Amino acid sequence: MTTTPPRPAVEIRDLHKSFGPLEVLKGIDFEVGHGEVVCVIGPSGSGKSTLLRCVNLLEEPTAGKIWVNGIEMTDPDVEIDSVRRGIGMVFQSFNLFPHLTVLDNLTIAQRRVLRRRRAEAERIARDNLERVGLTDKADAFPTQLSGGQQQRAAIARSLSMEPKLMLFDEPTSALDPELVGDVLTVMRKLAEDGMTMMVVTHEMAFARDVADRVVFMDGGVVVEQGPPHEVLGAPRHERTRSFLSRVLDPTQVAQLGQPEQSPEPPEPPRLPADDRHNL
Amino acid sequence: MKLRRRQRERLSLWLQYLAFIAIIAVVILAADWGRLREAFFRVDIIESMFPTIITVALRNTILYTLGAFAFGLVFGTVLALMRLSRVAPYRWVATAYIELFRGLPALLVLFLVGYGIPIAFPEREIPGGVFGSIAIGLGLTAAAYMAETIRAGIQAVPKGQMEAARTLGMSHFTAMRTIVVPQAFRIVIPPLTNELILLTKDSSLAYVLGVTAQTIEVTKFGRDTLNDRVNATPLLVAGLTYLAITLPLSQVVRRLELRYAKAR
Image (cartoon, rainbow over all chains, first blue to last red):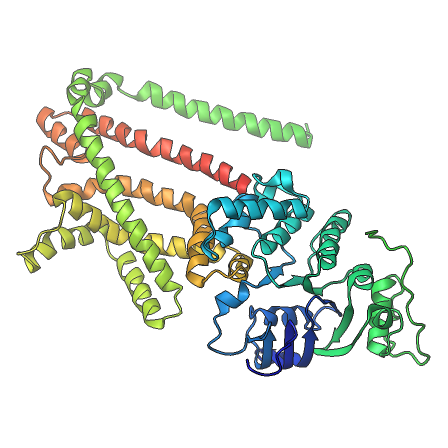
């Protein structure tokens, strides 16, 4: 790692990923700067979750290179466990450990991986529970929490490892609509605190308000990227436009049998001024 | 006369109750209670069996069972992890072992350990005497069954648990030990307790190893007393002694299942 010193937090070069004969990622070039919040949007099956899971090597790339904080993840000899300590990840299905209390969920990796003492681990855990507004849930078991509380606990669990980068894989997709706001509030606060974040999401209002950059993926490639007001407000590509119009106005279904590209360019979708998730 | 649907259902229910009561009544009336009591319920024989049946026989039954269970659990967990290993030869060895020992009668394996090994290696002795032989002899077979149960339990833990643990920087081994296996054991507590109940009964096979007055267990004790007194009462007492272990065990399982259902 002796190349140009200031490397971005995440650097992806010509990333390909296939599952058997199915090529999910078809050559992704991509960067996330330190302290940057990048939201990845796109239709389901576009490869955005796979891209995210490649960053911490939950999926092994078929070809291409990935660096996180200057360390090459795709190096076969990478010390994967120690690199992952610096990369937090939040899953769609929370994945809290159901046999442990919330507090133990937050301390187990601190103690087993970072070798922190119990008192120190618990102090850090409680600090992070406070950060996500779950101070009173330390001794509860995950199943006693609502989905939104579970996801916030999962975020706190990642934060307890003091990561430099946080990956969010559709963190609110499994939540009841009324619980989404709490989780997004926590994420927004995290962004304001300067955390480097890569967020795969369908929450367009969050992307618009919080992201420094929005990346639109479709069919395994990055179609376009840029500041949210450009990608979401004035998308340049037809595919982006049609995706956004479907997401923002789901009732306006394209007529069956009609090709997706209509003869006259559809009006660029307007973001509703008042989104359903007021943050 | 045509009956309505509800009337038909009620009638059918009453007829079944009636038939059941009739059968019970016939059995009660036809049985020769005097002879049955003479053969199976001689109070003096029951009294003569206490306290030895508890202090020696039941104690040994429990010891043999726990010994075999502990051996089977440890060895079975190792086999289960081998079955799931990335190292192919581990998988082959574990699969071969499991197939082999599930296919052999427990009694044959017990003979093998109790007599076969001492003949093959006369200079060596299985530690713990009868206890060691029965723990290993029954444990070898139990391990094969438990391995399959534990493997299924490990595979039943959602993949996201391993992913979350690895994402936090845990090694595969640490994630297995602290996250996956503890959850797997919760899942397999009911089938493993079933195995414990089976072992409690299989511990009666200890008699083939030639038990003494000190190492006697419940079934052999019952049979010896039957020979002494030429009466079937000891079998009834022995049977009830087993139930005194096995029935509470199933009750414990039900409790545990409820408690863990809450934590999942």
